[in-house]
Image (cartoon, rainbow, N blue to C red; front, side):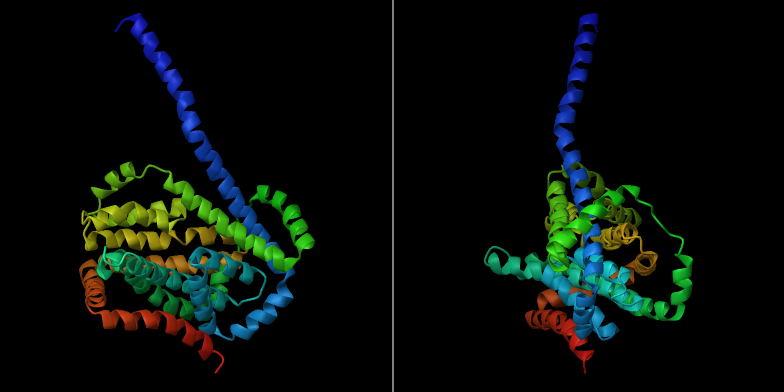
Amino acid sequence: MTGADELSEKQTGVMRVPKLMVEVGPLWVTALATVLLFLFAVQLLGTATDAAEPVIERTLRRVVVGNGSALGLSWLTTYGLTNGSVVAALTVTLLRSGLVTVSESFLMIAGSRLGGGAIVVFIGVLDYLQERGRQTLSEGTSLGLLTFLVTFSIYLPVTGVGLAVLVTFQSELLAATSGLELSLQTLQYFEPVTVFVTRTVGPGFALGIAFVLLFGSLWLFDELLKTVETETVRKYMFQHFERRWVAFGFGLLITSLTTSVAFSLGVVVPLYNRQFVRREEIVPYILGANIGTLFDTLIVAFVLETTTGVAVVLVVIGLAMLFTLVALLAYEPYTAVIDGWQDRLLEDPRFFLAFGLLLVLLPVALVVGGHL
């Protein structure tokens, strides 16, 4: 290579750097702005909840009269908001303000996961009804139903065992996590603004603004992730899906980093729909994603500086990890049960209809049962 060629190559390399910065720069700026918006929304939610505490308490106590109604309320609210992360964030905020008990907050976070798991089934059914003639019910709900069954297989036992653990060892758990604090000094700059907004528009409007900003930040992050080139990630992941522990690690890592199940599952949807990945290969990935999706709730607890909230979220994560490890260690019988249920639901329309009604009636019964 001549000196002129070397010089030309160096100049080309130098030119690539600014070009890369121009292409990637806006992505990072948008990501930073989205994170700051999320943090501000959480802070505003906490400030507005504290200010509206008397009103919220009167309203909440009319509905939540026990553990069962707390579980049912969060389950139904997740249906209504179509977002379990927002419900979990609100739960941590209510716990911080003393508006729900430790056990109620635990069940509300668990309910947000149960509701979130069922939403994917409803979305699949709606998609099937809109695309009738182009796809079968099995095609429209296959991945959503699989995600639901995996989610419920973990979070139903998490809910039961976790409640028993909290009732028995609540003081020990709270004492063990009392020193867990994440000092975020930069968030102090948000406080004057959140106080000003709450005082200016009132606690009720401030809560509404906080919800809009929280939804907006999560939506913006999902939209931002859609611009990320996923083909390379998909190709790299695909070759490792036959190894269940690696697939589990991918699901956990990607969902934890992006705080978006929509993104982490969206990456593998084309592989699953085109049958490049078998059902038993994608289950570990879903198991990992179902744990990773709780990390944004843990961040909310740290941002709000509530060690009790951190303890509750860690109990949910710890038990979810425990039952997930059991499922992975007993993988063949576990997937056999999941396969059996999914095949039965997809092959028998009457069974599927009864199952869908149960997903609606069960949380309603939990709420109503608390008032009987």
